[in-house]
Image (tube, rainbow, N blue to C red):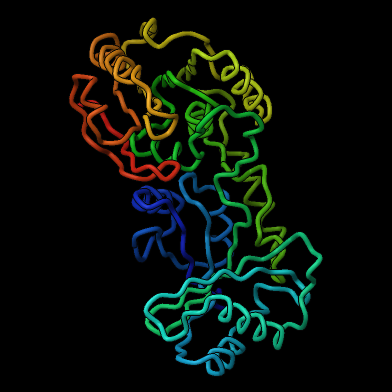
Amino acid sequence: MQKQKNLYFVVSAPGLENICAKELINLGIQPINIIRGGVEFEGGLQELYLANLWLRSASRILVRLGEVAARDFPILFQRLARLPWGRFVKPGQAYEIRVVSRGSRLIHTGRIAEVCEAAMTKVLGEKNGESELRQKIFLRMNDNRCQVSIDSSGENLHRRGYRQARVAAPLRETLAAGCLLACNYDGSSPLLDMMTGSGTFAIEAALIALHRAPGMARDFAFMNWPKYRSGLWQQLLIEAKREEKSTIPAPILAVDNNPKAIAAVQKNLEEIGLDGLIQLSCGNMQQLQPQFPNGLMICNPPYGERLGKNASLKSLYHDLGRVYGETFADWQGVIICPESELIKTTGISFSPLLRFANGGIKVALLEKS
């Protein structure tokens, strides 16, 4: 009996699509299409479970349920009612419908959602509005065609379950992991996170170095589907645990001049079971000296739009230039910031590895040339 295949879509932050595609390939899953905002692939439940368990740079993973053409609401209702909702939504399951519409006759997103709910009610019966577990349904109307997708992830995949403490302007875990992967970081060389904040770079680096699956300690929406295969999921967890390393091959150092930030990192490390595996230090990056001949140095410094414009930023970036260009001259150096006049204050040449948005601000992952 041939295994049933589905079409899946990995949602990523715009700019990280190629990173996601490489991650899929490393899992033995071949991408079939890379578009702005994500990557498509085909597979069965095993491929879907693997992607949710292992992808570090993805935001969520959708199942393409189907696509219907409709120029009026009665036709939309009829065609949505023919879709195989029962494969992914249990009768009575609570759900929420999110709609976007562009270039179509049907533009009232609230009405489109109502029609979809009526079609689902016809197939599945009334939903339980009291349940906290809500299956997300995504509808996209474009050129009078309605694409229907089912969310398999639940909470966004950046929610690894370890960030219990934070300081100002933290970087999302998926963005941090994507940046590390773009630098070809694999844990085999030292890493210095010299403005660590909540410790996201250092912790994501540790997860990569240990080869620990980022989805090990959380639940997913697919666990509530009618055909959820608990045995398959448990087997994938066992295999992932078997592949995990017990020690980090090369040191990871996290530095910040704010004692509260170091305390936050320590709490997050304890939460994820990495206590003692990352070297924490409270101090100014201007006083740092390399402990090793080479490695990867990374930081996400303040930039005016993010934490309020400040005249001292130019002085900070001047100091960054000295640390990157002189003190750690033999290290691979990357920095996240806008491609603006501020980065020129460093006095050294950078080239972009990635471009994406952080907190609504256009930034780049810039590598020291």
